[in-house]
Image (cartoon, rainbow, N blue to C red; front, side):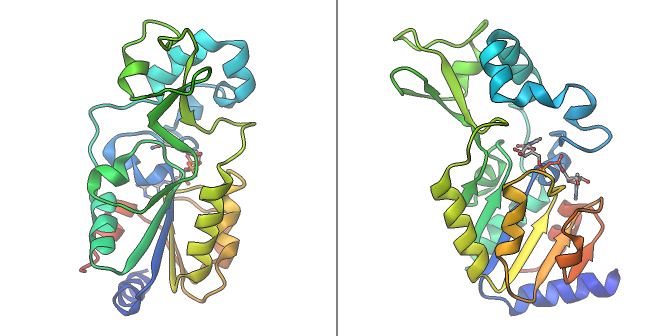
Length: 236
Ligand code: NAD
């Protein structure tokens, strides 16, 4: 493991075109629970509550649970977010591709962030398409309504909803072109996001995760550890 981390840090030094692809595990060290760990969200609520059909059939209940379990207003980026922002600033890292919806990469200073599953910070009226910030959801007593009477919906991809194809295609291109792909803090259980790993054809794929993933066989280095600690150890 120590050898693997050394090799990983050396690869970072050598690389000129790094891409990071991550998920909920990147934000657990900031205090946001992931989905599939023992203490994750799915230990508290059924997965179906994050589906489009649940949103349509039980709209008020959806917003109650969404506000309670999916929105975190007093969290801060951790060492992983900050190191990725630093790597981008140094010119080595070209893109952060994330399944997260919390906006913590941007809060840490990352600029080129591809949000595959949207963001809690973007919301829009389903009727007139007016954009709203997070306050419109937080301050609503029940279902948030636009001034036109339409429902304000988070720009977050629920199960049964398609990804933004333009963002997905851009992510494929960044991964296909990079010389070092770092994948971390994701169970790689959610498709089609997880299959993005397969767009990488190079020989430097590093996977940093606490638990095993279905894509472990494709990784050249597997680091079983906390992503904030592992990335935090990189010297730019
Ligand atoms: P997941 O819960 O399925 O997997 C998280 C993975 O991260 C697990 O394998 C876990 O072992 C690992 N992990 C947890 N903490 C870690 C740490 N400190 N260091 C290294 N590994 C760690 O989450 P996922 O793969 O991102 O996919 C599920 C969906 O979760 C995504 O669609 C995403 O939209 C959504 N989600 C987002 C947030 C967020 O925005 N912060 C939070 C929860 C879920």
